[in-house]
Amino acid sequence: INYQGITIASNATPTIATGTFRETFVDITVLAVAITSFTTNLSGTPTNGARMTIRIKDNGTARSLTFGASFEACGVALPITTTISKRTTVGFVYDTTTSKWGCVASITEA
Image: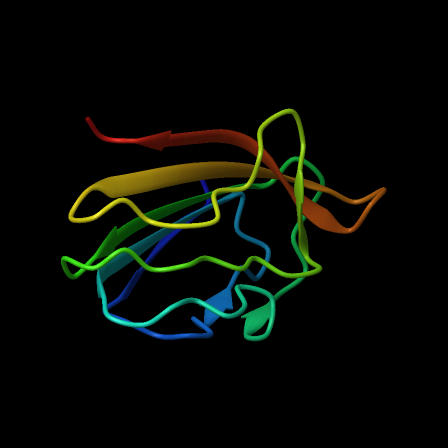
């Protein structure tokens, strides 16, 4: 598998370079600010069907999440906030027809 892992401590516009990886895992830990856009610093030319998983955990305060124009609900709604001190994991599949990352899974730990 053509895979990459990215770890980000906290950023309002996280930098995610997908390149041509078939699978990208982004781990956002101790999020201390609202994410105002996942799209702003998103780069790369993903292939059709590429997968991206984003796991987010706040720093003990719920934070709002804004994904932006490069993301869309694709059977599953995009999460709009974190749950205090819980990990939220969101799965995406890239669609070259829409040029967007479609949300196919979203779950927050119990």
